[in-house]
Image (cartoon, rainbow, N blue to C red; front, side, top):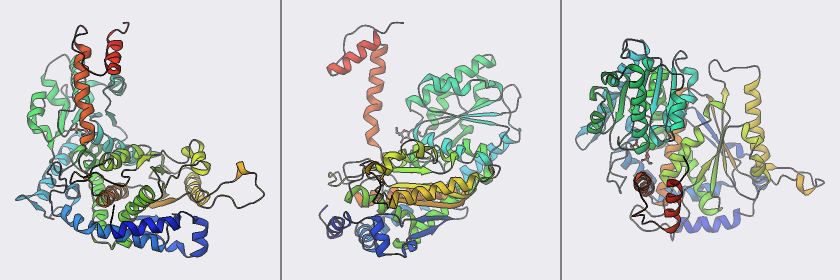
Length: 529
Ligand code: F6P
């Protein structure tokens, strides 16, 4: 991209490529100043292949790309999702009651709190047994049916916050159109005690609707076939009241949200209903408060002390100037086992784009390939490549000072955190013994961030996820892309519908795909029973 801020980084990167983290620490022994704190999170970015000049130049770039104006535009409700002509207001979902944000004549914060109130009333009525199932039994099982943003958020957050959840209830999540997913999820459940939440913004998604119909059939078969049972055991989270009613769900049991909430930004909306049922309305509001605290930080902190902005510019540095393709995320918390998958959607669906918002092609790499799994398990699997392989992979190491309530076991937290700190050191500095044979040399110079918080509370989780959301926006702004649409997934959806009807059609006429696709369809049609 031909501009002064970009060109300055290209020139600076030519110098920095030859400098190691070890050399950077020798030149700047006070690199422990390279940290930033926000909403209870401490980000140590000292072990990155950057110095003060790098940071200054990266911040010049985000300034030149107008990040602050774009943040303000988002908070004002402007249609920054240009390809869908929509506002982007997940930040409104966590604004406190009494705040106001008027968009197109409607106070969206008041609307948000109206739905939060409806969710809280419903969750409380299930949790305290006032609202019962068709046969009068108390609801003990909650199954969320959704996919993508209508699944990953609540299922990730439920795992993360299970320590705060109702232990006498079961919470399960179905997403895949593979029948094995639904069948395994309902296995062993008593239909009379089971509530299904059909979560779909559009209420047209093939996987979700197919699973919802199959779940309805399972329920009716178990409860005697009276359609009235559906209304007692199914509720919906959607923006599409017509389709919800068509399915047979009472629209009084529909929890709405709005077109300005993108699927992957919807955990904070009614899409979080299953999570609220698990952890209760107060803990859900604490999650929102954590996200709001990070929002305020993102909006008001100077760029050089702005945690999500620092995360974003580091991502840009590696992706665009040091040729990294991937970003690993390694939480040292077993309960964050689904965080990498959640962040895959957030980052890759948002920034996996090759045209700018104005339709022109990008001329620099965009989109990080996000992957990872929990530490310490990853250390015994793929960390070998991180330490001695040829790929440059920046890593986020995420950890906590204290275990969650009920999760303390001997000195295990100390061992967990010791591993996080030790890995960051080993990755950065490697070995320093010239007598070692080559295969034992750890070259070091492998960058990582340490993201630490006191404890994985609902507040801390909310703040962490919001930090990643704003990292994504920072990157999207640098790249000039629309981080809030997802046109790339549409073609596959359309073709899947077409192939499904061709698989179901008798005979071989009319297959008009390429030779390979036609052969695959014929082969599957001809499978032996
Ligand atoms: O496949 C893309 C996508 O549109 C995601 O962005 C979204 O989270 C998911 O599908 C589910 O969509 P819906 O909530 O409308 O069922």
